[in-house]
Length: 169
Ligand code: HEM
Image (cartoon, rainbow, N blue to C red; front, top):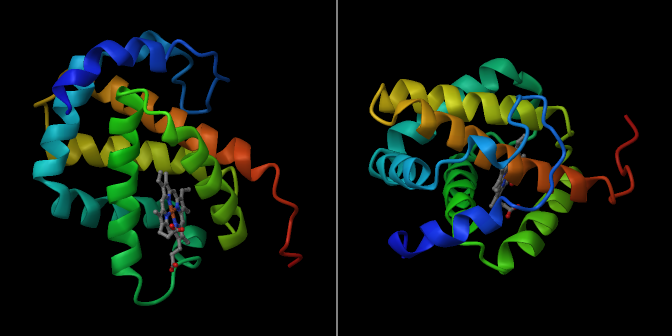
């Protein structure tokens, strides 16, 4: 599956997108081969990656930790699986992804996730990748991971804008 996806990658990133705070502005930063390789390596080390990711992310955004229940390991693991799955789907230009991310963006707004948490998610994801993968995937791999996670979170965040603020305090 992964091997067949490289061709579609350029199309997936040909669509215009807004710049992100994380600095990944457009499709320039994507190297499909490097990204797919990075994903494969992350999948092999998923348990460690997931554990470290949440440590790094929650360290930076303790307010995000509070949105999770006290025994939410299963949800956290599911969330990481979904993120990795979404990156694959982005590579493969899979049609279901946009609607799925929009739905996730809306449900996350209802959990209390705010748009300013998403750049921290991207930064933590890339930093964790550096830590867990070391130099194995190179700059192109890290740049591509950043670009892909930026695009996914951008779509979630954009959909969240359509959700009326439910929480007043
Ligand atoms: C700022 C970044 C994010 C925050 C703060 C966040 C927060 C949360 C929270 C609070 C939950 C609910 C956990 C519970 O029920 O106890 C959750 C669940 C989940 N998250 Fe995230 N999330 C973020 C990004 C993402 C991303 C990028 C994806 C995937 C593309 C994702 C996918 C999921 C999934 C699949 C679940 C399981 C339940 C559901 O489907 O809603 N999340 N997340």
